[in-house]
View 1 (cartoon, one colour):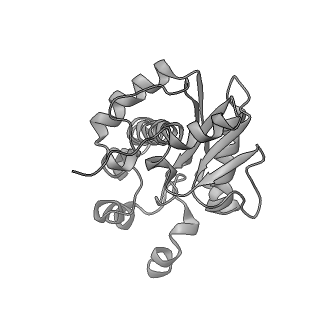
View 2: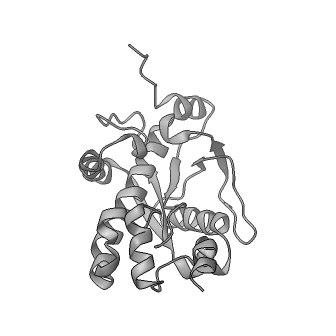
Length: 211
């Protein structure tokens, strides 16, 4: 049996060095063909134990929904932000991810001394993480704070895609694929073309075939 990851190790080491207020930050929806990119920032009480907390990608939708409620109840504070598809097209997805994450951090009721940010990038062409931060590759599976942020970002985005966008554009069946490039989504694109929520910069090859 694999040894269980200590999701508080990174935070513990930083707190032992004097850091008091840490937040975790992660984004969701970098890859889809439609919809916004979301980000969340979370400050958890030190050593707060949340049963089942893990990288959002390793959890079922039902488990993520349950954990969303637990995290938002237990967190000292949390915030979610998003950058729309039109801005992703106008800039680039890396810049949009960085902007969404910084906006989520800025949205926290308490200013963190240090943000733990998932990944290995902290700036794009037109946006950057400006809060003091530490990049953690694979952080959503290594840090409790980042794992919590990954779940809030993923659930928030999925709810938006399955709720608001599904209602606005039912023909695309966003509730089923959440904007990702699935076979069904491409079939709907073939049938109906773009809607305002599609990221045209992600669909250049598709567009070339259909013009």
